[in-house]
Length: 225
Image 1 (cartoon, rainbow, N blue to C red):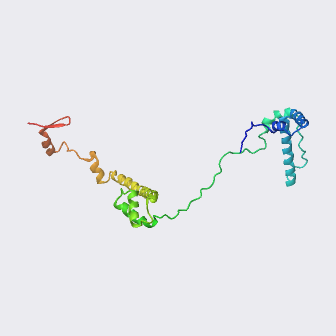
Image 2 (cartoon, rainbow, N blue to C red):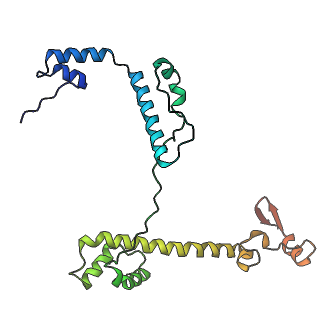
Image 3 (cartoon, rainbow, N blue to C red):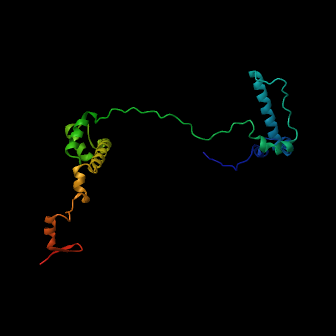
């Protein structure tokens, strides 16, 4: 097969280059091409569209009484002058955006790990740092015909889900415990608060006797001789 690629050309140019067309036909095409006016053609198209709309309205019973048919546009210059203003009249603008489609909820398919979920949770409770590869090894010992290296990704996905659920349960409890520990009414907060320790009163004789023989310089306390 031989493929030949030609330079892009309009139908008019291809017709003039066609070998089977006679010179008379080509001369007629050139004469018609010289008389073509794109603006006048657009005006005729708009007139045809208006007439088609009037006929459709008349068939549907929506024709306004005493409505005059549209006058054909003969002046191409006047039509081109008001074309920029009339292009948006009576037309609904198209909004280029994706249509919102409701999300279709997917039903969860049964997993091959569902029968072994209780064993996996028990193993994780005993050894929280257990890896997916170790869990897969234990499952392969129980069911060697069912579990192998191809199931490693499934076990990883399940392990990630279980640890996420455990974290969602532990973090609120930890935050609640921290809030209770920070309550000034509890003993733990009082023990941790440095300002809660009562300093000896200057009027207490016992405290004066205990501190009278010591000299404090800055943060250093020296016993007097």
